[in-house]
Image (cartoon, rainbow, N blue to C red; front, top):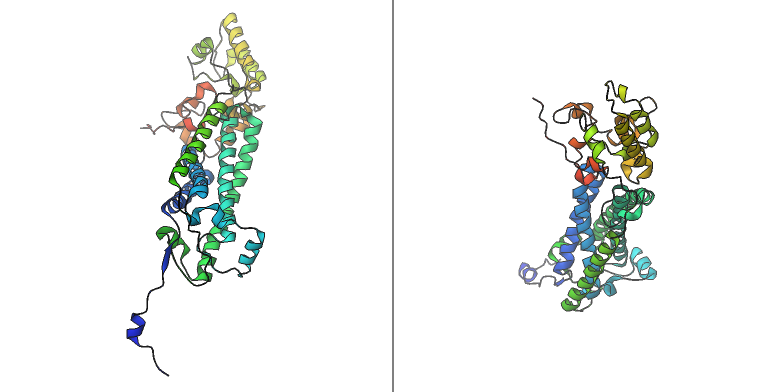
Length: 377
């Protein structure tokens, strides 16, 4: 049997390659990968102190998806929806391995891409509704606590669904790479793939940059206008602004607590027993006591629609009026060790203002949390 001639082997032309993925498709893909990785990690493991980071990468992911959708209508070849969106028959044929190799998105991969983008958009909406309803932050601040609470639950479910889709997507990439003997991840870096006989080639459609910029501008105008319209709606259920007399009298001994942190009956119990106020005599003249009592009851937790107001509305029967004894406070601070509160400059768990920069407003925004440096000698 004859052996191959080395000279002939070396002179064989290399397999041709085609530019499949343009720069924007590749850049948006990897930006979205980074944003989703940080968003999932900060969401599941970061807690409220990492909410600012979570919010930032979430917004970046939203902008990336919106721009990629614009590019799907105006970009070149394989970037276009018209190039990779297929019906059920094509998806079934691909799953059965009967439709050949696709240089662009295959029908099943295209379905996954749409699913991922839809999940990101839904996460952005539910995350915004949760922030608005629970903390009165952002354009959905007028949404109300009930809607915010429901949106937070849906947001968490969507996050799990997104994580499952990401895992399925990675599995699909590995499977297709093995089935077609190519590195799909590397192709999303270089943008190039080998051109083989029988391949489904991307269309030769060229990018329309003026149309892309015009469509992106329209999307931006709609987004900014919608934000302004939503943010301009009146917000009901905000904690009452601190009364000057209450602030002066209460802050003489401790921070002036917002009235929305306790129910009316708890405030009434506290004010009527000022002579035994947590072990001290804090009695005031009758007129001042009546004024403080009236303001506290008028702005108690029943009148506010924020997360803290709802969380602290139930008092501990054994410690009526003690905010740090409420089940809600304990649940929110369950991960904080007791020694964290004892150190300087916090000193006590009741010193809310040490960590919550907006404590006296009653909002307790997670974006206003800043743990002070330990100053314990």
